[in-house]
Amino acid sequence: MNLLAGKRILLGVTGGIAAYKSAELIRRLQDQGADVHVAMTNAATEFITPLTLQALSGHPVHLDLLDTETESVMGHIELARWADLILIAPASANFIARLAQGHGDDLLSTICLAAQCQVAVAPAMNQGMWANQATQLNVSALIAQQITIFGPSEGLQACGEVGEGRLLDIAGIVDLTAATFPNERLRGRKVVITAGPTREAIDPVRYISNHSSGKQGYALAEAAIEAGAEVILISGPTSLTPPERARLIPVTSAREMHTAAMQEATDADIFIGVAAVADFRPIEASDQKIKKDNTGERLTLTLEENPDIIAAVAGLNDGPYTVGFAAETSHVIDHARRKLTRKKLNMIIANDVMDQNIGFNSDQNETTIIWGSQEQTLPIASKRTIATKIVGTIADALPEARQ
Ligand code: CTP
Image (cartoon, rainbow, N blue to C red; front, side):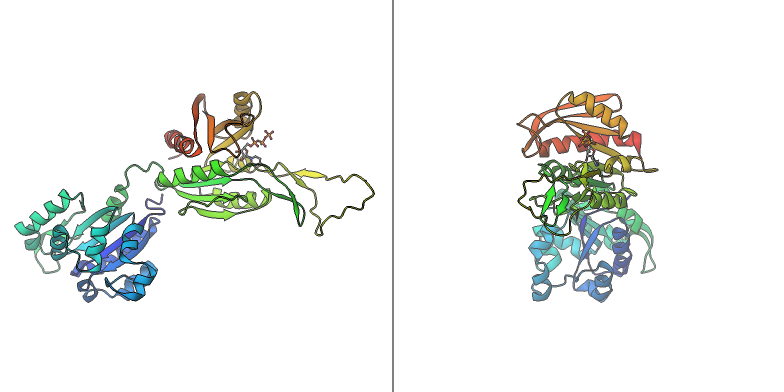
């Protein structure tokens, strides 16, 4: 599991011998899927070079409050807004004191002041400095400001003394970092979602398609991201803006969607097929525009079946938890249950597409979730609300199916 998939962490490095450990910390945070930007205090640059941390993080290191170069890439306010978590590791006694007092006289302290996200501090200092009453009062002030403290731990220190004040071990910092996102029920899960219609070419300018807007699939992508998942959105053509944190794979035809889905599903935890996949395609798309010859003759299109994408995913060995949608016009629950069994899905969401208030182009939906012997009807609500409920039901059902 990638415990920090898609998470944006601003790592603040302050001056102290433990600053060298920030290099390893960047790597371990990245191993868990985090995107890491680094801001360093001047004192930190005496212990480890910005170049090292830039190379490891893959982003320019932020150093000065008024640095025109990095400010033009991302200013301090923008950085504060960008981060899901600001992690100061190591945090020196001096920086803790300045943070406790609300100073804003360098880049890192200003970012902390402007932060709207959680701030966590991993202290590292000599045991005497840590035990000092002034430091302890400052730490209490940070706790009163809802700032989280990671560590410190005990042991042999760089100065040769033994005691409390060592930077918490890197694995411990990574675990606690992940634990600062507690309400994310799909944290560390890879979720693949298909959405929108597919287009099946007749010739270079014409195609067969359907009325799917993609709204329910995009809403599910947002809900899964909110639940902490890494989301891959395989989408047919729509006019929607994809959620910023989803990885979008744009496709046109059912066969393209099938290829992308099979590639992404092999290591996914959850697959949600919301796309209205065209069941048939013209046997051969003409490579030139088909002309009418004005003889009044009929044009016959011969169609062949497209692959059933979700059935193929459900058939994978050790495949993901698979959730389908059933667009039905009559006997909605019965037909949906049959589809659940026929396609060997774990869960299906039944939709009555004859109801004008819900379905394809509407912003509203009304569905019944069916899984195992259970059934839950969700009353009419926005597609986003329905999406959150579906994601919650999947998260509840998941532990039984796949750990
Ligand atoms: N689906 C798919 N690939 C297809 C057809 C459908 O992955 N070639 C998926 C849809 O994304 C949806 C589910 O299968 O999750 C059911 O789609 P639906 O159109 O309701 O069912 P069909 O399989 O097309 O069956 P029918 O047209 O007979 O109702």
